[in-house]
Image (cartoon, rainbow, N blue to C red; front, side):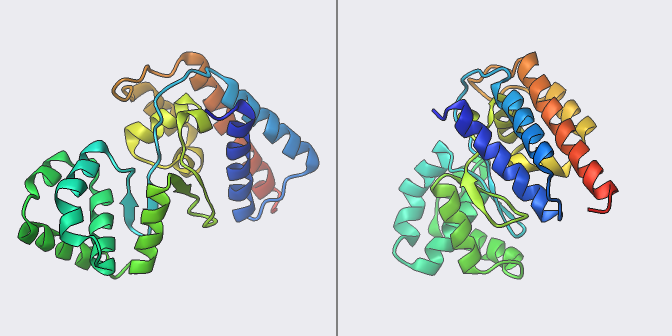
Length: 234
């Protein structure tokens, strides 16, 4: 399990990269304040939960961590049908990870003919937006346990509870979004509403009030930095 300092480093680095992507360079004083906010966030409600990996976004396609059901489907069907043919294997793995949580779809895809038809339909739908190279890159990130920062192209170890804290991990697992979605792409009120409404993932206790408060405080502080620098024309 990652130490609190390692968890803080991941969140601190991601936040600096996001700020830099907006053309914001923090003053030394604000860098220190950011680190302090990160420490409060990752130490709050530091409960152990299951490892909850975040999905990876590649163009319009979201690739989800391989579930046990998806792994069993690949072992029983996909590997025999597509392994060894590089292009077909990339498409098949991409399709599988894009539907890793779709139990009904996978359970109904038990013949190669039906699978190929679904792969072709899916590939035609996304082919205009990404290449096989892009898809292979995303697959590699997912299978090796990495999450991608869409703004910078950098990738980091997937957002797990030990790495990011129980609140962020539970948000990622419940709503199937990467950490930066909650940190950057939606407002504080929306985050608070999602926190209140989210059921805990199976086998995981709901994040406690201290953890929620620490996360909400960090989101609010981060947004205050954006408002401060962008308001000054930085």
